[in-house]
Length: 115
Image 1 (cartoon, rainbow, N blue to C red):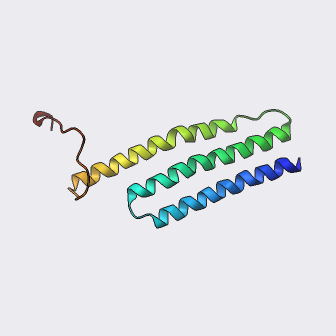
Image 2 (cartoon, rainbow, N blue to C red):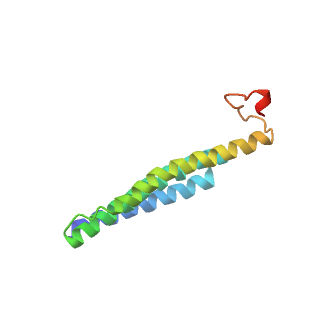
Image 3 (cartoon, rainbow, N blue to C red):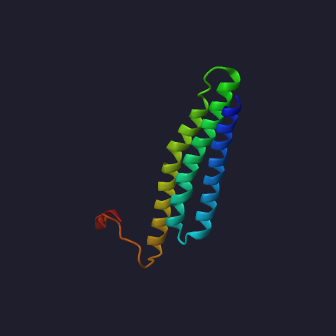
């Protein structure tokens, strides 16, 4: 049982290290667009580490597979990239509306009558 607890502790420490890396990335990176990438990846991987630790611990504790923790990780894995894309698109549209220099134009310009 001690090796399971050690593995659980290692997974939780890995998750904490990923959270720390996300915080450092938010502080050090300059623009909104570069800041979006680090927390999205680390949140997903950190959630998998915590879910794996919980599944391992409770499986060993109960003597049967406790895989329902994977549902949390699966939900985070699906929703974090979608949220990141939506936030990035909103920020890009906001910068385009302000006519900020250096912001790329849309890939396709709508016809004059649809504007």
